[in-house]
Amino acid sequence: MTQWYYAGRDRQRLGPVSAEELVAHYRYSRIALDTLVWREGLEQWQRLGDFADELGLLTAPESPAATPPLPPPPPAADAPFIPSSPAPRPTGMSRGKILLIVAAVMVLPCLGIVGILAAIAIPAYNDYTLRAKLTEAVATASPLKTSVAEHYASAGTCPRNDTDGFGAAESYAGRYVSQATIGEFDDGTCGIELAVVHIGNVNLDGKKIWFEYDPDDGSWVCSSEIDDRYLPVACRG
Image (cartoon, rainbow, N blue to C red):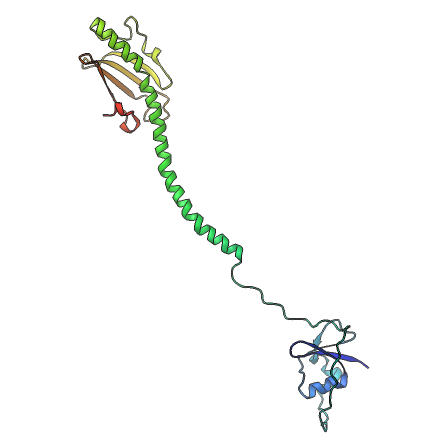
């Protein structure tokens, strides 16, 4: 005799029952055509409706005098598990995506701040570098100013590059100075003219720095055609 198993409302496995008992369950609406059933020889649970012809479910039922009692179904160890409905997949963003969004929200403003600071700091650093080079260039004139002042004090005249004790303009070249011209300026003032070089800025290389000597008080005045922001404080106009 073929033994059948069927799934209860809570998907509990019930049975075994005979084919007649299974049909009786259906006749009395205890199970329906979509109820899952299984018998030996089946690979998996199937709908009761798949066996309607085999069990004669669609034929007119005989009118029973009374509902036949059904024995309680014992558990069966050889029946396969009833397939359960797959758990719903979680929806929405994963934790990783949320963390990425949070990180982006925190990092983007920081990048903007870094960009602003860089836009301020880089030009300021460049100005500092240029100013340091020009400061070194100005320092080249220090020993020359001493020599010019001593010669003027003893001879009463302004020396020139060809004066005894002084060298050609190119002989005073340094890392940031191409030459130092000694003599009187067009207005008759005694002084020194430095031509700067290798500063690393096309607007500065080749420019001049002047030092004018006042023999009355022995002071020097520094001036230049270079923008004040690049010059040492003593040479700013």
